[in-house]
Amino acid sequence: MNKTALITGATSGIGKATAELFAEHGMHLILCGRRQKRLDELRITLGAKTKIYTLNFDVRDKAAVANAIDSLPDEFSNIDILINNAGNAHGLDTIDEGNLEDWDAMLDINVKGLLYISKAIIPQMVSKKAGHIINIGSTAGKEVYPRGNVYCASKHAVDAINQGMRIDLNAHGIRVGAVNPGLVETEFSNVRFKGDEARADTVYKGFQALLAEDIADIIHFVVTRRRHVNIADLVVMPTAQASSTIINKKL
Ligand code: NDP
Ligand code: 8X3
Image 1 (cartoon, rainbow, N blue to C red):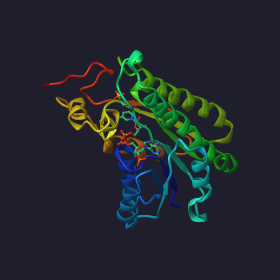
Image 2 (tube, rainbow, N blue to C red):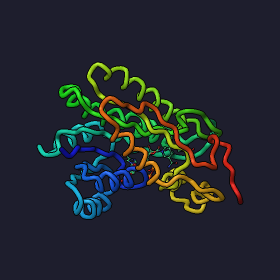
Image 3 (tube, rainbow, N blue to C red):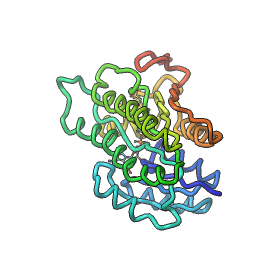
Image 4 (cartoon, protein in one colour):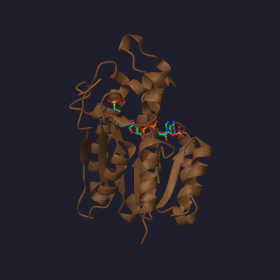
């Protein structure tokens, strides 16, 4: 039977590439994001390959999250796979110069938003004693780099939540694991630098960054293992990257 996956942050980058790959494999998809035009495009393009349902909400809004999940029609209401992917960095400032709105955005989206979505979906997984949750963390959740402060804190929180979910859901037969990428060339740096494309481009200059499709491949591998296999925590970096700050750039 075709599995149903819900992907947050499906309008761009890792989430979009994952949606495209899952659609190739015939998974039924619930695709979430805030940019309606992109959700509409995905419904049309991927709808030619599989069943697609789109939900437009901001993960920061807990009522909107709950309403969106409640609103799912019967044929999409049984979710097998949750990809907790929506998130971004906002700003790259030292802690003394940090912007409060950026801090709120990162903690509200990357941490609380992930929790709100999980809270809305986990009960049905508990009741059917099955389900698979993939939390998209980051190398920023494994180490802290200069000016990364609050983004790193948000991803360290994802790392802790991933472990906590796995522990608490163990008795229910639910698989929980994290995929933690290093540098992936997506809209991530455009968002971090608030639309300054030239600055965003410099992040990925001089080396081959990971592509969103590389992470989608890995996520697909993780969710297609046999039932007794749970990939609990996976870190992936570009070959040119050894840590958040050691990158073999040929500039
Ligand atoms: P993108 O900016 O390309 O995609 C981010 C996605 O998150 C978009 O689809 C966006 O959709 C969604 N999103 C952001 N804010 C909200 C919100 N408030 N409510 C609902 N959806 C939201 O970045 P990536 O694909 O790179 O990032 C995806 C995940 O991967 C993030 O969690 C990021 O931290 C993580 N990551 C990224 C790395 C990288 O180097 N790129 C490395 C490690 C981890 P919309 O704007 O339509 O709402
Ligand atoms: C994204 C990777 O190094 O830009 O999580 O924080 S990094």
